[in-house]
Image (tube, rainbow, N blue to C red; front, side, top):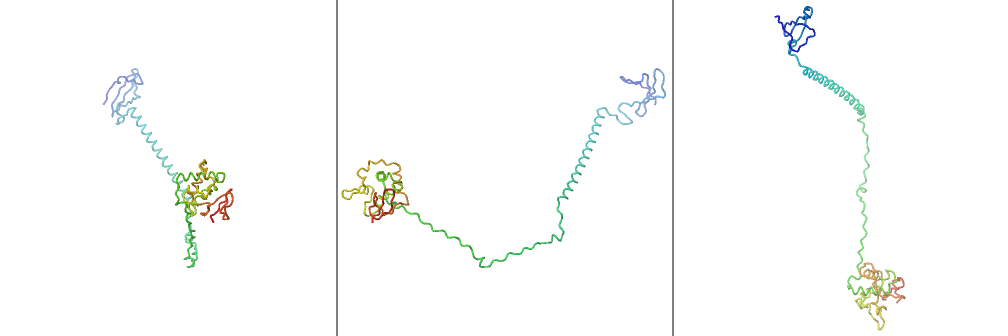
Amino acid sequence: MKHEQSAPAGYRPRFAGTMKLYLVRHKEYGELTVNGVNKPGVRVYRARRGYAGGRQTMTRQERRKRRRQRRRRMQAGILLSLVLVLGLIIALRAGKERETLEPEIPLAAERQKLTYIAPAPALPETAAEETPEEPEEPPVEPEPENRYAELHFSDEDVYILACLVYHEARGESFEGQVAVVEVVLNRMLSDYFPDTVEEVVFQKYGDVWQFSPAPYLYSAEPDKEQYLAVHTAIEEREHILSEDTVYFSTAPYNESVDMIIGNHYFCKIF
């Protein structure tokens, strides 16, 4: 069917003139007329809006969107191919490294070779039964008891003894000062002398004092060394003199000399 149609508003044809169009299968065909002259050999083709060969045409945005989708699919395919190739390369290298690290499998004959170890000779029964004897521990010797543990001393007794040491042995060594106190304590244990500190220190034989400083004893000024000598003689378990040593002087009192300390001779009773 022949249909004559004018150009839509706003449409500018490439050629100035009229256009006769024919609608056939959603396509427009026309004869071009330029300046009143028909151009029969020229046919103009223009697709109608919304149709192209029986298919619906796309807008510019839709075409761009489709091109982007194609490009993304192509990129994804390329990336997947690269990943597969890389995985294949890694697998091949791992296989080669495993082959180099695996030790060679020994031959069956070599695996069957066993080294024979001779058993150790059995020990004789006597040697097996013998056990090393444990060394006997030496007997523990009991600690010596304090010789003067049963004696009782007051603060006054300690002061009297410190004054006696001050007068008799303050110039002597510490051992010599302790020995002077032991002489007094040995007399307290002896049956031949009194049994208190005061009575022993101030004892007389007739008009003779047993200890010459007794008359002026309290004029002494004992210091910590004299007090320490007194407490050492009373409390120490190891004593300097024997128990029957009851005399001391700057000369031997008798022939039974027990010890010489400094300027003093310490003698036994018999």
